[in-house]
Length: 468
Image 1 (cartoon, rainbow, N blue to C red):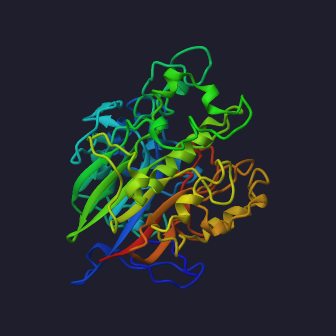
Image 2 (image 1 turned 90 degrees about the horizontal axis):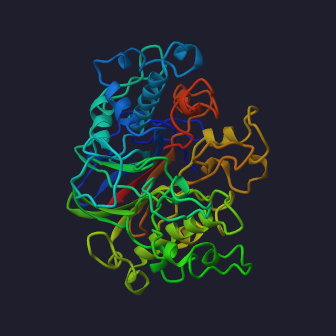
Image 3 (image 1 turned 180 degrees about the vertical axis):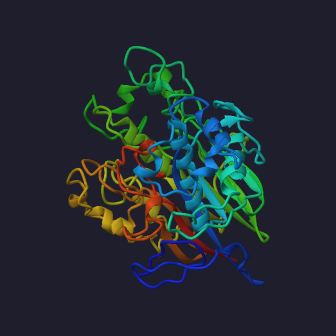
């Protein structure tokens, strides 16, 4: 088993080894094939108030005070004098450095607040495949185009990474439904939005690509009830209180959307070969009541892609925001990416909702991204509970550093290529405790840092795919 913990075209030295040299996978091509790195990163670039992300990304311009601390070690003594916004900006710099170190050719960034041409907020209107939000542009201009590391960090300096193609879809999060989805007796708030969010656009996502984007299918407005055999109207739960069909009214059932954020099929042209980049971020299976509506919603959001890649009659029910129907054609090349909030062995997902997707014969699961940092984090002496000790799954495959009081560290972030392509290498950016890159991911719950971590509780996951 090989493990990769740093930047570049991977050269493995076993556990604890590091990849060295600049990443040039996008340029590694022959007349017959190219090796392309696809990645997903729930970067926790969501903010607590409408417009904050735009403000932070603007404050990160190269001529601002941010440049004075972007190369510092992300520890308490180094940021003690920073303002709250500077701490948020530092987090973005750490995220950018991680992206530069793994240098993917195609990247999905989850938890990235949506804006409409610089106006914070979201809507239910689909955007063309050429649309890039202002925030996505600012992350490129002020962070990804700026070198990181070096200086007093103890880390090598990174090279900027540039993505000429971007797509930012609208998200259902925070958009009010006008209905009482959470049955609390009043209308409004996060529980009554089409997707959980304090404000419209919170927790959205954006896509970066070094290759041209040709088209997009989005499914933001697909209704949950229109999925055959869904858990909304076909819930097998026998108790009345636990059955979703009893929890929601007829009007609510007719309005509930399946994507909690959005599901998008981004068609990318890689040296003449079309690759479908399937991006989503299903809702976490957080406990609600006996009806377990979040867990069942998560289950069907994940199932959507399994049906979609199966194509034919299985996907005939699917319709998109552009007026098209059905799923992928036979033989289509795809890569599924995102934070799916479901571990195949542990956690609180409904009937281990990711398992059917992993078992779909159209998916290549011969290689599972892994890290050394995940192994160490499972038994870290600073853990605040015993959840990790009870887990069944191998911690080397974990992708998120959650509270060990529950649910513990989990594998919830995925990059899943189609079975008709080969995987060359893969990894999770979770360096070992002694690695110089470790401060970029830190340890769970560092209270002096914004959101408690230098970057995110999720780790970047990447897979190198051989594209014919």
